[in-house]
Image (cartoon, rainbow, N blue to C red; front, side):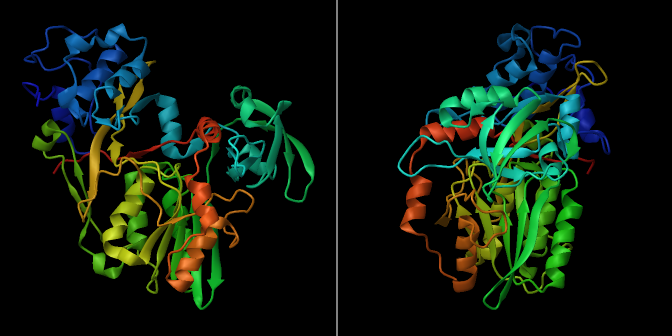
Length: 468
Protein backbone atom coordinates (compact mmCIF):
# COMPACT_ATOMS: atom_id res chain seq x y z
CA UNK A 1 0.00 0.00 0.00
CA UNK A 2 1.24 3.44 -0.90
CA UNK A 3 1.41 5.64 2.22
CA UNK A 4 2.46 9.25 2.05
CA UNK A 5 5.58 10.13 4.06
CA UNK A 6 3.45 12.27 6.37
CA UNK A 7 -0.20 13.11 6.59
CA UNK A 8 -0.99 16.43 4.99
CA UNK A 9 -0.96 19.34 7.42
CA UNK A 10 -4.55 20.25 6.65
CA UNK A 11 -5.71 16.71 7.40
CA UNK A 12 -3.99 16.69 10.77
CA UNK A 13 -5.45 20.07 11.61
CA UNK A 14 -8.90 18.70 10.90
CA UNK A 15 -8.40 15.87 13.35
CA UNK A 16 -7.07 18.15 16.04
CA UNK A 17 -9.85 20.68 15.72
CA UNK A 18 -12.99 20.46 17.78
CA UNK A 19 -15.76 21.00 15.25
CA UNK A 20 -14.12 21.86 11.96
CA UNK A 21 -15.11 19.97 8.79
CA UNK A 22 -13.44 16.65 8.23
CA UNK A 23 -10.74 18.11 6.02
CA UNK A 24 -9.55 21.70 5.80
CA UNK A 25 -8.62 22.76 2.31
CA UNK A 26 -8.14 26.49 2.51
CA UNK A 27 -4.63 25.87 1.20
CA UNK A 28 -3.59 23.60 -1.63
CA UNK A 29 -0.08 22.98 -0.43
CA UNK A 30 1.03 19.84 1.34
CA UNK A 31 3.46 19.76 4.21
CA UNK A 32 6.97 20.68 3.19
CA UNK A 33 8.49 17.22 3.64
CA UNK A 34 6.14 15.54 1.14
CA UNK A 35 7.97 13.54 -1.53
CA UNK A 36 5.96 14.73 -4.55
CA UNK A 37 8.33 16.26 -7.08
CA UNK A 38 6.00 19.00 -8.30
CA UNK A 39 4.55 22.05 -6.64
CA UNK A 40 0.77 22.38 -7.01
CA UNK A 41 -0.49 25.50 -8.71
CA UNK A 42 -1.43 27.78 -5.82
CA UNK A 43 -5.19 28.03 -5.44
CA UNK A 44 -6.01 25.72 -8.34
CA UNK A 45 -9.16 23.78 -7.48
CA UNK A 46 -8.03 20.79 -9.57
CA UNK A 47 -4.89 20.28 -7.48
CA UNK A 48 -6.89 20.69 -4.29
CA UNK A 49 -9.44 18.08 -5.33
CA UNK A 50 -6.71 15.56 -6.09
CA UNK A 51 -5.01 16.18 -2.75
CA UNK A 52 -8.29 15.45 -0.99
CA UNK A 53 -8.43 12.13 -2.84
CA UNK A 54 -4.81 11.29 -1.98
CA UNK A 55 -5.64 11.44 1.72
CA UNK A 56 -9.28 10.34 2.03
CA UNK A 57 -10.11 8.17 -1.00
CA UNK A 58 -11.06 4.67 0.08
CA UNK A 59 -8.78 3.24 -2.61
CA UNK A 60 -5.99 5.82 -2.31
CA UNK A 61 -3.38 3.07 -2.54
CA UNK A 62 -4.33 2.73 -6.21
CA UNK A 63 -3.82 6.40 -7.07
CA UNK A 64 -0.71 7.68 -8.83
CA UNK A 65 1.30 10.55 -7.41
CA UNK A 66 0.23 14.12 -8.01
CA UNK A 67 3.10 14.50 -10.48
CA UNK A 68 1.97 11.49 -12.50
CA UNK A 69 -1.73 12.34 -12.40
CA UNK A 70 -1.28 16.01 -13.41
CA UNK A 71 -4.63 17.38 -12.16
CA UNK A 72 -4.21 20.67 -14.03
CA UNK A 73 -4.19 18.79 -17.32
CA UNK A 74 -7.95 18.21 -16.90
CA UNK A 75 -10.53 20.84 -17.87
CA UNK A 76 -12.02 21.14 -14.38
CA UNK A 77 -12.57 19.49 -10.98
CA UNK A 78 -15.43 17.31 -12.27
CA UNK A 79 -13.11 15.73 -14.82
CA UNK A 80 -10.45 15.17 -12.13
CA UNK A 81 -12.96 13.22 -10.05
CA UNK A 82 -14.15 11.23 -13.06
CA UNK A 83 -10.56 10.13 -13.67
CA UNK A 84 -9.98 9.30 -9.99
CA UNK A 85 -12.92 6.88 -10.15
CA UNK A 86 -11.12 4.82 -12.79
CA UNK A 87 -8.54 3.74 -10.19
CA UNK A 88 -11.12 1.97 -8.01
CA UNK A 89 -11.35 -1.86 -8.08
CA UNK A 90 -13.29 -3.64 -10.79
CA UNK A 91 -16.54 -5.51 -10.25
CA UNK A 92 -17.94 -7.43 -13.22
CA UNK A 93 -15.54 -5.56 -15.45
CA UNK A 94 -16.53 -2.08 -14.26
CA UNK A 95 -15.03 0.26 -11.69
CA UNK A 96 -16.77 0.00 -8.32
CA UNK A 97 -16.67 3.75 -7.87
CA UNK A 98 -19.42 5.27 -9.97
CA UNK A 99 -20.38 7.37 -6.97
CA UNK A 100 -17.78 10.09 -6.32
CA UNK A 101 -18.58 13.59 -7.54
CA UNK A 102 -18.31 17.25 -6.62
CA UNK A 103 -20.50 20.35 -6.55
CA UNK A 104 -20.03 24.13 -6.51
CA UNK A 105 -20.64 25.58 -3.05
CA UNK A 106 -24.15 26.92 -3.71
CA UNK A 107 -25.37 23.63 -5.19
CA UNK A 108 -23.98 21.64 -2.27
CA UNK A 109 -25.54 23.95 0.31
CA UNK A 110 -28.93 23.65 -1.40
CA UNK A 111 -28.58 19.87 -1.40
CA UNK A 112 -27.65 19.65 2.28
CA UNK A 113 -30.46 21.97 3.36
CA UNK A 114 -33.12 20.06 1.43
CA UNK A 115 -33.62 22.82 -1.15
CA UNK A 116 -34.36 21.84 -4.72
CA UNK A 117 -34.26 23.90 -7.89
CA UNK A 118 -36.35 21.83 -10.28
CA UNK A 119 -40.01 21.32 -11.25
CA UNK A 120 -40.69 19.29 -8.12
CA UNK A 121 -41.81 16.02 -9.64
CA UNK A 122 -40.40 12.77 -10.98
CA UNK A 123 -41.01 11.28 -14.42
CA UNK A 124 -40.97 7.55 -15.11
CA UNK A 125 -42.02 5.33 -17.99
CA UNK A 126 -44.31 2.38 -17.27
CA UNK A 127 -43.15 -0.91 -18.72
CA UNK A 128 -45.45 -2.24 -21.42
CA UNK A 129 -46.20 -5.95 -21.42
CA UNK A 130 -43.86 -7.83 -23.76
CA UNK A 131 -42.36 -4.66 -25.25
CA UNK A 132 -39.30 -2.49 -24.80
CA UNK A 133 -41.21 0.56 -26.03
CA UNK A 134 -43.44 2.74 -23.87
CA UNK A 135 -45.63 5.76 -24.53
CA UNK A 136 -46.89 5.69 -20.95
CA UNK A 137 -44.87 8.34 -19.07
CA UNK A 138 -46.15 8.99 -15.55
CA UNK A 139 -45.52 11.35 -12.67
CA UNK A 140 -43.80 9.23 -10.02
CA UNK A 141 -43.78 11.67 -7.08
CA UNK A 142 -44.45 15.33 -6.33
CA UNK A 143 -43.05 17.72 -3.72
CA UNK A 144 -45.82 19.86 -2.30
CA UNK A 145 -43.95 23.21 -2.29
CA UNK A 146 -42.77 22.96 -5.89
CA UNK A 147 -44.21 24.31 -9.13
CA UNK A 148 -45.80 20.92 -9.84
CA UNK A 149 -47.09 20.52 -6.27
CA UNK A 150 -48.69 23.96 -6.00
CA UNK A 151 -50.58 23.31 -9.25
CA UNK A 152 -52.02 20.02 -8.01
CA UNK A 153 -49.98 17.59 -10.09
CA UNK A 154 -50.07 14.13 -8.51
CA UNK A 155 -48.43 10.73 -8.76
CA UNK A 156 -49.98 8.64 -11.49
CA UNK A 157 -50.84 11.51 -13.83
CA UNK A 158 -49.96 10.52 -17.36
CA UNK A 159 -47.69 12.83 -19.35
CA UNK A 160 -48.90 13.10 -22.94
CA UNK A 161 -46.36 15.64 -24.16
CA UNK A 162 -43.67 18.10 -23.03
CA UNK A 163 -43.34 21.29 -25.11
CA UNK A 164 -45.33 19.52 -27.80
CA UNK A 165 -42.99 16.50 -27.89
CA UNK A 166 -44.89 13.21 -27.65
CA UNK A 167 -44.01 11.37 -24.44
CA UNK A 168 -42.55 8.06 -25.58
CA UNK A 169 -39.22 6.28 -25.28
CA UNK A 170 -38.25 7.12 -28.87
CA UNK A 171 -38.22 10.80 -27.91
CA UNK A 172 -36.42 10.51 -24.58
CA UNK A 173 -33.46 12.69 -25.60
CA UNK A 174 -35.70 15.48 -26.85
CA UNK A 175 -37.87 15.22 -23.74
CA UNK A 176 -34.80 15.42 -21.53
CA UNK A 177 -33.53 18.47 -23.41
CA UNK A 178 -36.90 20.15 -22.95
CA UNK A 179 -36.84 19.44 -19.21
CA UNK A 180 -33.48 21.22 -18.96
CA UNK A 181 -34.87 24.53 -20.24
CA UNK A 182 -36.28 25.72 -16.88
CA UNK A 183 -39.87 26.23 -18.05
CA UNK A 184 -41.97 23.61 -19.81
CA UNK A 185 -45.52 23.20 -21.02
CA UNK A 186 -46.77 19.76 -20.06
CA UNK A 187 -49.98 18.14 -21.25
CA UNK A 188 -51.33 15.69 -18.67
CA UNK A 189 -54.14 13.18 -18.52
CA UNK A 190 -55.44 12.69 -14.98
CA UNK A 191 -56.83 9.44 -13.51
CA UNK A 192 -60.30 10.98 -14.07
CA UNK A 193 -59.41 11.13 -17.80
CA UNK A 194 -59.31 14.93 -17.80
CA UNK A 195 -56.73 16.65 -19.99
CA UNK A 196 -54.76 19.50 -18.40
CA UNK A 197 -51.98 21.62 -19.85
CA UNK A 198 -49.80 23.26 -17.20
CA UNK A 199 -46.68 25.38 -17.29
CA UNK A 200 -44.04 24.08 -14.88
CA UNK A 201 -41.22 26.39 -13.86
CA UNK A 202 -38.02 25.23 -12.17
CA UNK A 203 -37.38 27.23 -9.03
CA UNK A 204 -36.01 27.09 -5.50
CA UNK A 205 -38.18 25.33 -2.91
CA UNK A 206 -37.77 23.18 0.18
CA UNK A 207 -38.69 19.55 -0.39
CA UNK A 208 -40.98 17.75 2.02
CA UNK A 209 -39.04 14.60 2.89
CA UNK A 210 -42.14 12.68 3.97
CA UNK A 211 -44.24 12.56 0.81
CA UNK A 212 -47.03 10.45 2.31
CA UNK A 213 -47.92 9.20 5.76
CA UNK A 214 -51.02 7.19 6.60
CA UNK A 215 -52.25 4.38 8.85
CA UNK A 216 -53.95 1.33 7.36
CA UNK A 217 -56.00 -1.36 9.06
CA UNK A 218 -55.02 -4.84 7.87
CA UNK A 219 -57.00 -7.53 9.65
CA UNK A 220 -56.26 -7.02 13.33
CA UNK A 221 -53.15 -4.95 12.65
CA UNK A 222 -52.57 -1.22 12.46
CA UNK A 223 -49.94 -0.56 9.79
CA UNK A 224 -48.11 2.75 9.55
CA UNK A 225 -47.05 3.66 6.01
CA UNK A 226 -44.42 6.34 5.36
CA UNK A 227 -43.17 7.35 1.93
CA UNK A 228 -39.78 8.90 2.71
CA UNK A 229 -37.90 10.47 -0.18
CA UNK A 230 -34.65 12.01 1.08
CA UNK A 231 -32.32 12.06 4.10
CA UNK A 232 -31.83 15.83 3.93
CA UNK A 233 -33.32 19.07 5.18
CA UNK A 234 -36.25 18.81 7.59
CA UNK A 235 -36.26 15.00 7.59
CA UNK A 236 -35.92 14.40 11.35
CA UNK A 237 -38.85 16.58 12.48
CA UNK A 238 -40.98 15.22 9.63
CA UNK A 239 -40.16 11.61 10.58
CA UNK A 240 -40.86 12.37 14.24
CA UNK A 241 -44.27 13.83 13.36
CA UNK A 242 -45.13 10.72 11.35
CA UNK A 243 -44.10 8.35 14.14
CA UNK A 244 -45.92 10.39 16.78
CA UNK A 245 -49.05 9.91 14.68
CA UNK A 246 -48.31 6.17 14.40
CA UNK A 247 -47.88 5.95 18.18
CA UNK A 248 -51.20 7.72 18.80
CA UNK A 249 -52.90 5.08 16.63
CA UNK A 250 -51.18 2.09 18.30
CA UNK A 251 -49.39 1.03 15.11
CA UNK A 252 -48.11 -2.56 15.23
CA UNK A 253 -46.21 -2.73 11.93
CA UNK A 254 -44.54 -0.22 9.62
CA UNK A 255 -43.98 0.02 5.87
CA UNK A 256 -41.08 2.32 4.94
CA UNK A 257 -41.28 3.27 1.28
CA UNK A 258 -37.80 4.20 0.01
CA UNK A 259 -38.38 3.45 -3.66
CA UNK A 260 -36.95 6.78 -4.89
CA UNK A 261 -34.79 7.67 -1.89
CA UNK A 262 -31.19 8.05 -3.04
CA UNK A 263 -29.83 8.74 0.45
CA UNK A 264 -28.41 11.75 2.24
CA UNK A 265 -27.08 12.50 5.69
CA UNK A 266 -26.07 9.52 7.81
CA UNK A 267 -27.24 11.05 11.11
CA UNK A 268 -30.80 11.03 9.75
CA UNK A 269 -30.47 7.34 8.83
CA UNK A 270 -29.21 6.65 12.37
CA UNK A 271 -32.23 8.44 13.84
CA UNK A 272 -34.60 6.45 11.64
CA UNK A 273 -32.88 3.20 12.62
CA UNK A 274 -33.38 4.01 16.31
CA UNK A 275 -37.09 4.54 15.64
CA UNK A 276 -37.43 1.07 14.14
CA UNK A 277 -34.96 -1.05 16.14
CA UNK A 278 -36.29 -3.45 18.79
CA UNK A 279 -35.63 -2.74 22.46
CA UNK A 280 -33.10 -5.61 22.46
CA UNK A 281 -30.80 -3.60 20.15
CA UNK A 282 -30.10 -0.87 22.72
CA UNK A 283 -26.38 -0.42 23.32
CA UNK A 284 -25.47 -2.83 20.52
CA UNK A 285 -23.65 -2.12 17.28
CA UNK A 286 -25.55 -0.35 14.54
CA UNK A 287 -22.58 -0.23 12.17
CA UNK A 288 -18.85 0.33 11.99
CA UNK A 289 -17.16 2.55 9.46
CA UNK A 290 -13.89 1.78 7.71
CA UNK A 291 -11.43 4.08 5.95
CA UNK A 292 -8.17 3.80 4.08
CA UNK A 293 -4.93 2.95 5.90
CA UNK A 294 -3.98 6.57 6.54
CA UNK A 295 -7.28 7.59 8.11
CA UNK A 296 -7.44 4.30 10.00
CA UNK A 297 -4.05 5.04 11.54
CA UNK A 298 -5.38 8.44 12.60
CA UNK A 299 -8.32 6.90 14.43
CA UNK A 300 -11.16 7.60 12.02
CA UNK A 301 -12.73 4.12 12.20
CA UNK A 302 -15.66 4.25 14.61
CA UNK A 303 -18.58 2.15 15.78
CA UNK A 304 -22.09 3.56 16.07
CA UNK A 305 -24.40 1.87 18.59
CA UNK A 306 -28.17 1.91 18.98
CA UNK A 307 -29.43 4.14 21.77
CA UNK A 308 -33.20 3.59 21.20
CA UNK A 309 -33.88 7.11 22.48
CA UNK A 310 -36.09 7.80 19.46
CA UNK A 311 -38.14 4.59 19.85
CA UNK A 312 -41.87 5.39 19.96
CA UNK A 313 -43.69 2.21 18.92
CA UNK A 314 -43.68 -0.34 21.77
CA UNK A 315 -46.05 -2.62 19.82
CA UNK A 316 -43.88 -2.72 16.68
CA UNK A 317 -43.48 -6.20 15.17
CA UNK A 318 -42.76 -6.22 11.43
CA UNK A 319 -40.95 -3.67 9.27
CA UNK A 320 -41.39 -3.81 5.50
CA UNK A 321 -39.21 -1.80 3.14
CA UNK A 322 -40.15 -0.92 -0.43
CA UNK A 323 -37.17 -0.43 -2.73
CA UNK A 324 -36.16 -0.06 -6.36
CA UNK A 325 -32.99 0.79 -8.29
CA UNK A 326 -33.55 4.32 -6.99
CA UNK A 327 -33.08 3.17 -3.38
CA UNK A 328 -29.48 3.97 -2.52
CA UNK A 329 -26.81 4.58 0.07
CA UNK A 330 -28.31 5.95 3.31
CA UNK A 331 -31.52 4.07 2.43
CA UNK A 332 -29.56 0.85 2.01
CA UNK A 333 -27.64 1.60 5.21
CA UNK A 334 -30.97 1.78 7.07
CA UNK A 335 -32.06 -1.57 5.62
CA UNK A 336 -28.68 -3.17 6.34
CA UNK A 337 -28.23 -2.07 9.96
CA UNK A 338 -31.69 -3.25 11.06
CA UNK A 339 -31.56 -6.71 9.49
CA UNK A 340 -29.42 -8.39 12.21
CA UNK A 341 -31.90 -7.31 14.88
CA UNK A 342 -35.25 -7.61 13.10
CA UNK A 343 -34.37 -10.86 11.31
CA UNK A 344 -37.47 -12.48 9.82
CA UNK A 345 -39.55 -9.52 10.99
CA UNK A 346 -37.93 -7.45 8.23
CA UNK A 347 -38.51 -7.88 4.49
CA UNK A 348 -37.85 -5.98 1.27
CA UNK A 349 -40.44 -5.59 -1.50
CA UNK A 350 -40.02 -4.21 -5.01
CA UNK A 351 -36.89 -4.62 -7.12
CA UNK A 352 -33.13 -4.76 -6.56
CA UNK A 353 -31.75 -1.64 -4.89
CA UNK A 354 -28.98 0.60 -6.24
CA UNK A 355 -25.97 -0.88 -4.38
CA UNK A 356 -23.88 1.67 -2.48
CA UNK A 357 -22.26 0.62 0.83
CA UNK A 358 -19.88 3.59 0.81
CA UNK A 359 -20.14 7.26 1.72
CA UNK A 360 -18.52 10.68 1.57
CA UNK A 361 -17.38 13.53 3.74
CA UNK A 362 -18.32 16.93 2.27
CA UNK A 363 -14.91 18.56 1.89
CA UNK A 364 -14.68 22.16 0.65
CA UNK A 365 -11.72 23.29 -1.42
CA UNK A 366 -10.76 26.85 -2.36
CA UNK A 367 -12.80 28.18 0.52
CA UNK A 368 -14.07 31.75 0.27
CA UNK A 369 -13.06 31.95 -3.37
CA UNK A 370 -15.25 32.30 -6.42
CA UNK A 371 -14.62 28.68 -7.43
CA UNK A 372 -15.23 27.13 -3.95
CA UNK A 373 -16.11 23.51 -4.56
CA UNK A 374 -17.27 20.59 -2.42
CA UNK A 375 -15.72 17.20 -3.06
CA UNK A 376 -17.85 14.17 -2.30
CA UNK A 377 -15.27 11.46 -2.86
CA UNK A 378 -15.80 7.91 -1.58
CA UNK A 379 -13.99 7.77 1.76
CA UNK A 380 -15.83 5.39 4.08
CA UNK A 381 -17.51 1.99 3.95
CA UNK A 382 -20.05 0.77 6.53
CA UNK A 383 -20.51 -2.73 7.93
CA UNK A 384 -23.48 -3.92 9.97
CA UNK A 385 -23.24 -6.00 13.15
CA UNK A 386 -23.42 -9.24 11.12
CA UNK A 387 -20.42 -8.23 8.98
CA UNK A 388 -22.40 -7.39 5.82
CA UNK A 389 -20.80 -4.55 3.89
CA UNK A 390 -20.18 -5.42 0.23
CA UNK A 391 -23.64 -4.90 -1.28
CA UNK A 392 -22.31 -3.12 -4.35
CA UNK A 393 -24.88 -4.95 -6.47
CA UNK A 394 -27.76 -3.91 -4.25
CA UNK A 395 -30.22 -5.85 -2.11
CA UNK A 396 -32.42 -8.39 -3.87
CA UNK A 397 -36.07 -8.09 -2.78
CA UNK A 398 -37.60 -10.84 -0.69
CA UNK A 399 -40.72 -10.38 -2.81
CA UNK A 400 -40.49 -8.86 -6.32
CA UNK A 401 -43.16 -6.26 -6.98
CA UNK A 402 -43.64 -3.57 -9.60
CA UNK A 403 -43.54 0.16 -9.00
CA UNK A 404 -47.23 0.63 -9.69
CA UNK A 405 -47.51 4.13 -11.11
CA UNK A 406 -51.25 3.79 -11.64
CA UNK A 407 -51.85 4.01 -7.86
CA UNK A 408 -50.90 6.68 -5.36
CA UNK A 409 -48.54 6.17 -2.42
CA UNK A 410 -50.36 4.60 0.51
CA UNK A 411 -53.05 3.01 -1.65
CA UNK A 412 -53.38 -0.61 -0.44
CA UNK A 413 -53.92 -1.67 -4.05
CA UNK A 414 -50.52 -0.27 -5.17
CA UNK A 415 -48.57 -3.40 -6.13
CA UNK A 416 -45.51 -3.02 -3.88
CA UNK A 417 -47.51 -1.93 -0.84
CA UNK A 418 -50.07 -4.65 -1.48
CA UNK A 419 -47.33 -7.29 -1.33
CA UNK A 420 -45.93 -5.82 1.89
CA UNK A 421 -49.37 -5.74 3.55
CA UNK A 422 -50.00 -9.36 2.55
CA UNK A 423 -46.78 -10.39 4.33
CA UNK A 424 -47.59 -8.34 7.43
CA UNK A 425 -51.00 -9.96 7.68
CA UNK A 426 -50.07 -13.55 6.81
CA UNK A 427 -46.37 -13.82 7.63
CA UNK A 428 -45.82 -15.48 4.25
CA UNK A 429 -43.46 -14.12 1.61
CA UNK A 430 -44.95 -14.80 -1.81
CA UNK A 431 -45.05 -13.12 -5.22
CA UNK A 432 -47.21 -13.65 -8.26
CA UNK A 433 -45.65 -15.08 -11.42
CA UNK A 434 -46.66 -11.89 -13.23
CA UNK A 435 -44.84 -9.70 -10.71
CA UNK A 436 -41.67 -11.78 -10.93
CA UNK A 437 -41.70 -11.66 -14.73
CA UNK A 438 -42.34 -7.92 -14.76
CA UNK A 439 -39.50 -7.11 -12.37
CA UNK A 440 -36.94 -9.47 -13.90
CA UNK A 441 -37.79 -8.89 -17.59
CA UNK A 442 -35.10 -6.90 -19.39
CA UNK A 443 -36.30 -3.61 -20.91
CA UNK A 444 -33.09 -1.81 -21.96
CA UNK A 445 -34.79 1.09 -23.75
CA UNK A 446 -37.26 1.81 -20.93
CA UNK A 447 -34.62 1.36 -18.23
CA UNK A 448 -32.21 3.70 -20.04
CA UNK A 449 -34.95 6.30 -20.45
CA UNK A 450 -35.85 6.14 -16.76
CA UNK A 451 -32.19 6.49 -15.76
CA UNK A 452 -32.05 9.72 -17.76
CA UNK A 453 -35.09 11.04 -15.91
CA UNK A 454 -33.69 10.05 -12.50
CA UNK A 455 -31.71 13.05 -11.26
CA UNK A 456 -31.89 12.31 -7.57
CA UNK A 457 -28.84 12.44 -5.31
CA UNK A 458 -27.28 9.04 -4.61
CA UNK A 459 -25.11 9.01 -1.52
CA UNK A 460 -24.46 8.90 2.20
CA UNK A 461 -22.91 12.01 3.70
CA UNK A 462 -21.10 11.44 6.98
CA UNK A 463 -20.73 14.06 9.67
CA UNK A 464 -17.40 15.72 10.30
CA UNK A 465 -15.07 14.00 12.74
CA UNK A 466 -14.65 15.71 16.09
CA UNK A 467 -11.80 15.71 18.58
CA UNK A 468 -11.71 12.58 20.71
